[in-house]
Image 1 (cartoon, rainbow, N blue to C red):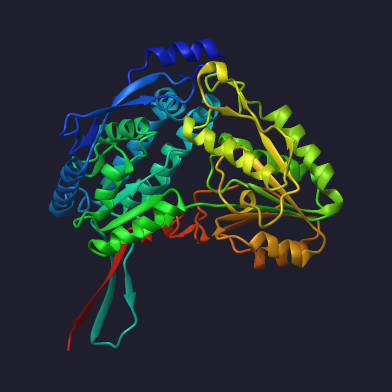
Image 2 (image 1 turned 90 degrees about the vertical axis):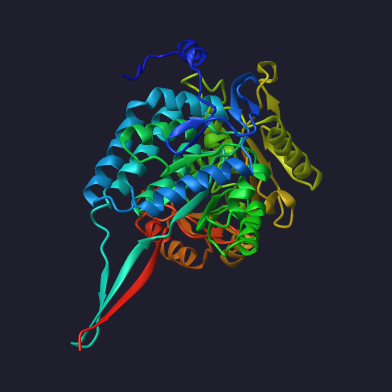
Length: 500
């Protein structure tokens, strides 16, 4: 049972007692890398090594793909009755919920996010996603096409085969569930390559899936580095699809690898530079809260984070003041095992230096730091950056165009609605956007014209498993979440029978 009164000291004691599994999970069991190599997994909280993880390579990927292919071909999962698939996946979701504290600790230690969010958001949402797709197991139906009386044309929906899933380090549990939930309910086998920065919860998930009754070889987890494990997975000739979430740069490589190998399908959810458009009549308190939580939640390490504010010049100063106040009062930065903290550590030193580097680039381009801008808590050995606001940013500045992926929001002003729309759409990305206004006619115009996969009106980051998530332009293609995600893991076969 979750101890809701637990303090930082309590969580530190629990963290000290945890011994994470670092081996790969292939064909139903934990295995070391075939090379015998491991790499030290340090926590960004304080730099302490918390596990030795299998440093897998192409030979391990090949073993996992062979196990996944064998499982697919003999039908041990795809030919299960729908009710049995549903039972196993629902059991998987329950085991995730039962493992709440352990998974939450792994997630927080692995990536530096605060324990309160790991407990309340990441683990529950992972379980909810598996449960959501489990419920489709006995509701996926084929179609009958209209024909003449002497013919029967059936459109069958069939599993693709072996799906390679590559997930990032910012929301490992949630994004893994977004991939494996629909892929498994469709009948595929999966080889998952977690980010090298965050392998621990994925390995734990595989063990829980096995305990739930998922047959051996159906869900495999191969940790390792991108060049040594991710690339061989994407190039593998017996992988039918790569589902990738990560940077746009690496997403483009996934498309190249697919073309260089077997023309496998590719689904990409990549970078973002999501704008908040704040009109002069907006409720500034609501907008400030939405903007602050939208950029500072999870330390800004969110692909669709609202990292650009495009605000009418007449209300800019008031809005900046309110954003800073929300950050100060509601989103305190602190030790990730402190239940009162709302912002934790950035993933690693190099990423922290990247974020601080962008702040320097912004000021060099003429931006002004309105709030934050510094590294803090350096004495911990971890990687922490203050909630930051960069004011006086022009649309052509690098900080307005490039993904920072940290707790940094940039502010640009406009005078007229067409200018606001032009600035908001002036991006290579198109993952998400928001418009803040009391004028529903204006809101309607913006929702029609903003080029983004999700557009919020007078809110930000509200979502449901029933709504698809993904982007336009170089934010990728294909959608996670919703029933639409299942079809990308399936193929359509027409079976035409003539009776005459």
